[in-house]
Length: 119
Length: 195
Image 1 (tube, chains in turn green, brown):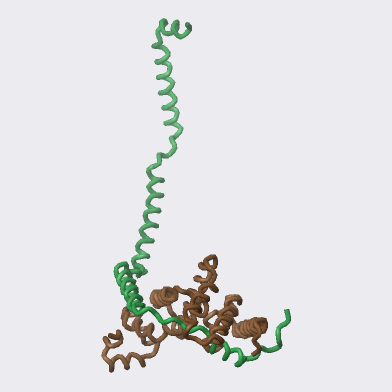
Image 2 (tube, helix red, strand yellow; image 1 turned 180 degrees about the horizontal axis):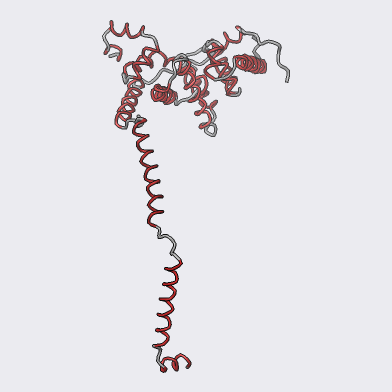
């Protein structure tokens, strides 16, 4: 598309014609101003009722610190409360205990029970 | 009784001379009477811009929308721009939204014809014909071209201010104005009017 080298600033004939023959703007309804001011008052009241200011930086810092502290506390607690792994001696004791219990349990099985199980 | 009579004359004159930025400050501090003065000062032009861009029957509602948006936006208004420039930008936004919303509704030309019929008895027939033509010429333009033509040739705003209102370079304003005028002239020629 070709553009002219420069755009003429004025086209007075056209502008005058447009201004002369434009539609007259209809007048506002008599209560428009009061209607707008009423809406403004309502909007003002609602703004006062719900303050939009944010908490100051000290409060925000305090909140962030509290969250961080609770996270760290949770982690430390988890590590402390989790039982540590058993030593070799403890494992041997436990194994021996389970073995004894198992044998005694088997030893107490009556011959009737064995027959029932076979049938 | 006029609403203006409610304000004492001396104080009303003093307030009328108060610059926009001072009234804006009063509004930000919660003084809604400052906003009333801003409304009285600017409503006529806002109304004219909206009417030329939308030629709408809902003009009062659109004006109300503009001023309410302005009131709510005042705390964010940076006083680097003029209040009027900022306000006209809101008016342009409202007009733009309205056009999009009513694009599928009835033909605006029909509205215009109804209005013309109502006024026909009182107005000269030739003038009425030209009014009809101007209105149809504006209606057949793109919204961008129409906006620039209305703001510059009808509302006589400077190109620099139009550029600020529309947030476009001055060169683009010049270009749009050139093409809008060319389109309008072409339309008039087609209608048998030589300017």
